[in-house]
Length: 169
Length: 231
Image (cartoon, rainbow over all chains, first blue to last red; front, top):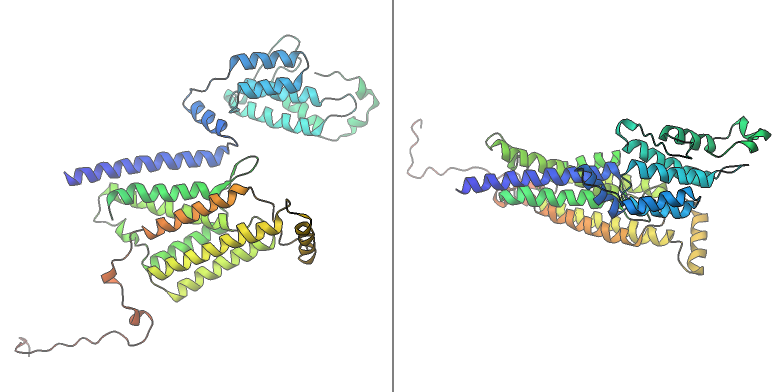
C-alpha cells in the first residue's frame, strides 16, 4: 500500500514538473509582456481564444474613417493578447497609413507597423494572410510588410521629386 | 528524503527559481534566459555541492531504484542546474565592467571552494554569504549609483562617478520590483539547496581527517581470548 502511494506521488510529481517546466519554457520562448498576453497565449494554445468582435468592428470603422489612433486602441481592446492575425494586420495597416507622408514616412510608426505585421504573419496559417475588402489597396500581409520595409529603407528613389505624387495605399 | 520532497517540492522550488531568476520587470516584462557563462558556473556549483556532500546524486539516481524514481531524480538534477544558472545570471550585472568583475568573482569563488573542499554546512553558509553580497552589490549599491531619479546632489555625484570610471560602472536603472523578485528567488534557492538529499551525518569524515592532521585512526585488534585459525 505504501509502495502504491509512493508510486502515485512520484507519477503526480513527474506530471506536475513536466507541465510546469513546459509552461516556463513557453514563457521564455514567447516572451509575453503582459498578463493578458499570457492568458491569451495559453487559451489560444488550446484553441479557446476569441477576440472581442464588437471592438474589432469599431476599430475597422475608425480605420476606414482615417482615425488611426482610435482604430489602434479599439484593435488593442479587441485582441489584448495579440493572438489574432487579422486584428494584427489591421493594427499594422493603421500604423502604415498614419505614418505615410508625401515627403517622408514616420520611421517610428512604420517600425511598430512592421512588428505588428510580423506578428500577423507568424499567427496566420502557413504565414499566408489575404485580406480583401472594398477600398483597401493592400490585400495581403506580405504586401503590407514590403511597403513598411520600403518606407524604413533609405534608397535613391526617396530623392525622386515625382515621389510626392505617389498614392497612399 | 520523502518521495513528495524529491518528486514535487524540490523540482517545483527550483523551477520557480528558474522563472523568477529570468524575470526582468519593467515597462515590458522580459524573461531573460541564462547566459552561457552562468551555465558553466551552474555546473561548477553542482560540482561543489556534490563534493561537499550537500547533494548526493546517487541518492536520487541509482540502479537499485525503480525507473520512475530515477526519472524523478533526473528531473531534480536538471531543475537544480537550471535554477543555479538562473541565479548566477540574475546576480550578474547586465553590462560593462561590473559584469566582468562579477563573473570572475563567481568563478574564482567556486574554484576556491572546490579546492578547500568544505563540508555541507560550510558550503551552504558560504553560498548564502556569496549570493547575499552579490545581491547587495548589484541591487543596492550599483542601482543607487545608476538611479536617474535622485536629487541634484545625487545626480552630481553620479556624473562625477561616471566621469571618473569613464562610464564603465553605471548600469541601466532597474524597476523597483526587480530587487524584491531577486531576493525571493535567492531565498527560495538557498532553502531548496538545504533540502537536497545530502550525506548522512554518520557517514561524513570527521573534521580532523578532512583538515589533514592526525591521519586516519590506526586499526588495532585486541585478540583477548580469541584465537585466530591461522595463528
